[in-house]
Amino acid sequence: MKVIIAPCGIRNILDANDMAIYMEDGVRNIVKNAEIYKFPLLNGDSPIEQTKALGGKIYEKETLDPLGRKIHAKYAALNDKVIIELKESSGLRHLNMEEKNPLYTSTYGTGLLILDALNKGYRDFYVFTHGSATNDAGIGILNSLGFRFLDINGNEVELNAKGLYTIRDIDSSKKDARLDETSFTVVTDYNQEFSGLHGIAYTYGPIKGATPLIIESLDRGLRNFALVVEKKIGVDVEKVKGSGAGGGVAAGLYSFLNADIISTIDAFYEISNLKNYIYNADLVLTGSTEVMKGEKLNPVMMDIVDIAHKNHVPVVGIFGYTDNGIEKLYSSGFTGIYPLYKNRLHMDNFYAEPHEMLVKMVESIISIVIDEQYEG
Image (cartoon, rainbow, N blue to C red; front, side, top):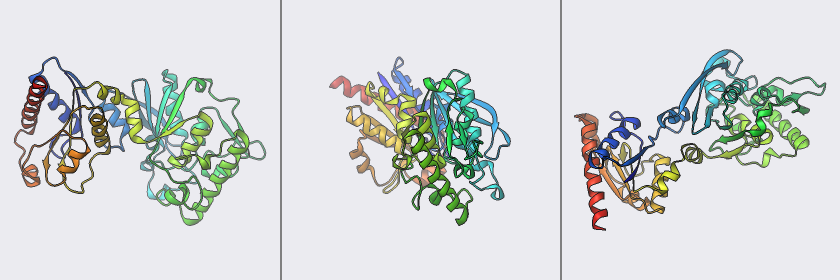
């Protein structure tokens, strides 16, 4: 029996990792030799922690923050794929209110993390763009990998948004040779325009500390970058969907490193190989805190349910409690839905051995599944 366990956790009671462990215990108590594959589902804004939950390695490296100060930052690896988060070294979290100004912040520190992973032998990178403090179109990252961005006098420009406006030429003669055997994927759900009134400067500039005048400067820099890139290498980043992600990092990596740009959910599947496990599974166990009418459930969980349903794999959800909205979940592909508690009040105030309740519930579910398969 092959079982996929992919829960989100039950808020304030069991986190996703613990829930997966106890679900596994319940399965093994009934089917000792079951093939079990655990994929605890964490918050989508924490890909490094998600990778750790899936059994990946975590690395820590001295690098630079958005303003060039020394810090230590993390990246992760799973199935020979490297997970880089812009926010780790190039994120807003490193800046106080007075320091926020996307004209002067750089992604160079993120490039140093990529270099460290290259030195370790990795050649497959996924760059998550959420939470960046930058608007440099990725020239900081690219410079750390050997690309030089030059002004009208042939001097290197500042590696920030201020430098974008002065770029007139690009020198790739000294790029890291290992890049020719390396693949990059930018992960984002951003689909708006690269520049202009609906572009990244106007949309995210205020969050990163930009005043109206600074926003205009940011946008002029992005437009100049797009023009030079199209002139020099023939790529029109203005027409590339998602190119504005991460302060334009997607545009830079797409243009110079042939990066793909994909959604968060697609990245999860590629990094984890979960789809291949679902195709060969006999059962998927999942679940989260609550089912209520209008309540938005974890999108990855719901996508897993959809994939399993389309491949005729039964899916059972165990939730903290259920209220309204169960019918919609059944129509979405759930085979069975079970609550641990009678209602929210019961869940919030009754903590008696929730792991034992979960184990026993899974035992009952597995017994029912086995009986149905036998009768079938």
